[in-house]
Length: 50
Image 1 (cartoon, one colour):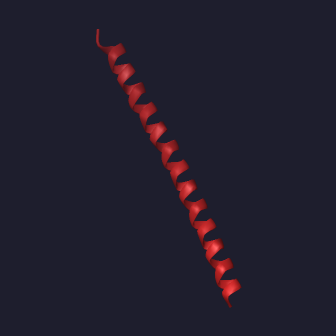
Image 2 (cartoon, helix red, strand yellow; image 1 turned 90 degrees about the horizontal axis):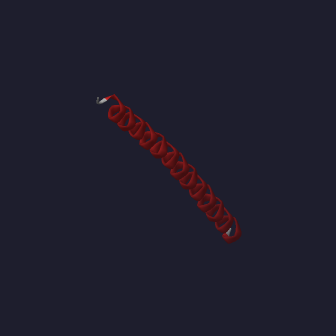
Image 3 (cartoon, helix red, strand yellow; image 1 turned 180 degrees about the horizontal axis):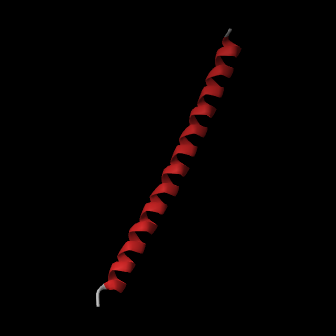
């Protein structure tokens, strides 16, 4: 009688995968936002300095 254990393991693996996927999406979004903000600040500073 191993099917239930296998099923739980499979579900756990899938959940882990989706959790990692969501985390990577959030990280990518945060990184992109940070880059855009930094670029905007840099552009503003360069514009002011000119």
